[in-house]
Amino acid sequence: MDSGGSTDMTLAFDLEALRRLAYPDRVFQDARQWSEYVGVVSEEPTYVVTNFTRKHRIRQDFFSGPRSREESLENVRAQFGTERHVFVGVDDEDTALADEAGWEFLGVEDAAAAADWELGDPEEPDESAGDDSRDDWP
Image 1: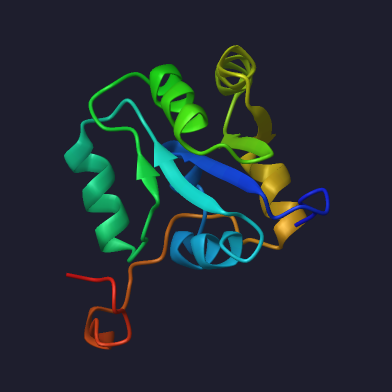
Image 2: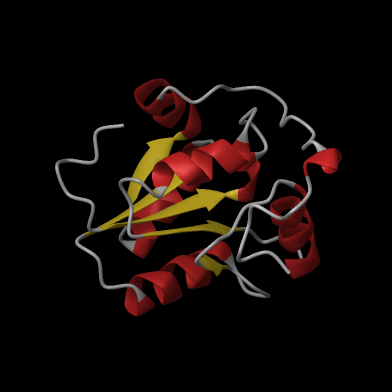
């Protein structure tokens, strides 16, 4: 994906955008190559986001917690002073949200095309693989 030549970027995924990617864990691994911070924002309860990220073995640098997506984006922007802040979402409402919060917007389909990510229902992780390869996994 073209990050504009800078890796000084914070990348936030709307939970619904992640749900449209076949391999969200691989997406996060890939995004870490050209982003300083990567996380998830959602208005869903915290446990919903936590369950999704644990199930797919996603280590996020930030998450929204019990607040609105706009407040989450504003807080993340204030906390992570990177050169760019990019929000990956799914629709016009997400575009407006990014604009209001001072973030660049990127539709999940466009992001997937640019980064060669596969769209589709998230694959179920292989439970037999174990967590030994992850030093950040509880």
